[in-house]
Image (cartoon, rainbow, N blue to C red; front, side, top):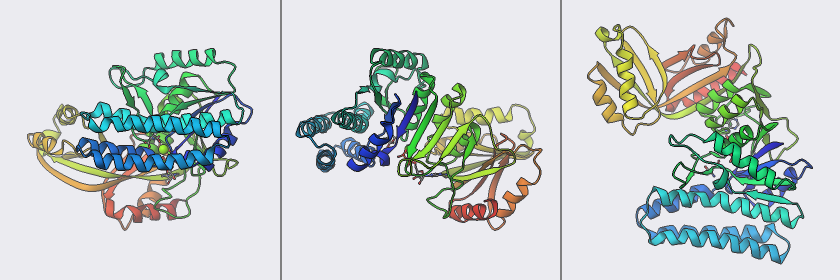
Length: 436
Ligand code: ADP
Ligand code: ASP
Ligand code: MG
């Protein structure tokens, strides 16, 4: 059994849903994970923003517009009147439910309920479509099988048990469908796995069910060697090590949600990235092995802030770094990159919510400088230190760009550079030219 996850663009219209149906009806009994139709979650976020601001009219305008679009999709999706009716009723039920929040006190709990409606609708619509085609599909409610624990981490024991129960109880199904992204938290409330989290759902379910493969179907033919949104002529990478893929995902390759790597890696289940539009393209396979001596890809992550603490006297003393890190920890701010010298330490953060407090506390230990609007450029590949010469290639590609930090040696798979965001595109293009 495989998990086949389809992202928003892959189910973004009636036509796309029909193509996904063709792909999943391949004679295998697989588990299909769907995102919300493209644009939906963004619109649900916008509705919630209006409701936080007590602007019910603003929210309802979007609800009405969305609902009208959904009815159009339904009209195109089904052939039989009976299914059009079912589709319309389902969608209406969800939008009416969203409307009930217009006059309520609006908190993060209500927001999470609203954000869950996109996946609930796309999967219901898709499941009806399969049934209209005569496929014996079963819709497994993600809200009954995906749960997080007290720390917000997936409750793997629960997930495994509940998935197994569902699959056994409905063993005569030809295909299973479930929602990506949504779950329940420790308190039983509706919650989610963060934006883009459907990839995580796929990987958690793949690991829980000890499946043969986790397939992430999207709108591009695999992980490319550079960000196709900023660089021309990028190419798909045939295979990557889990650690390489994790570095790329954490450092900006939007195609894969960073959290989705670990469950698959630990369970040693290959992750395959595939293109819904070109289903025969080989895509990218992620495994526990890497292609020796290859520099595979480049990615960039924006909105990075660099913080330097300079303190000649204290840095030499043991315990100094611990004190510095404790400050970040106390504001629940994680550090991405770090470089040290005898007189100072620089770190980067991507969440500047508590920047002022952090800087204030750090001043106890030394002179603090902050640089905002920075980007991390991450180069990924087999970079074991015994492979000679790759650093030179990478660094010389960036010869015309001012570099604020360089980090190498943390893993065998990555060199990272911190540069000004204004230079990002230039850096990505230069690296592509010189490396690929
Ligand atoms: P989905 O909705 O299917 O989850 P996403 O939009 O999350 O799809 O991810 C696919 C997009 O990721 C691509 O359309 C592409 O623009 C972007 N992307 C960014 N970096 C890369 C990369 N290195 N390789 C491939 N796609 C990338
Ligand atoms: N629909 C959610 C989002 O847009 C989850 C996902 O697509 O992975 O973030
Ligand atoms: Mg995605």
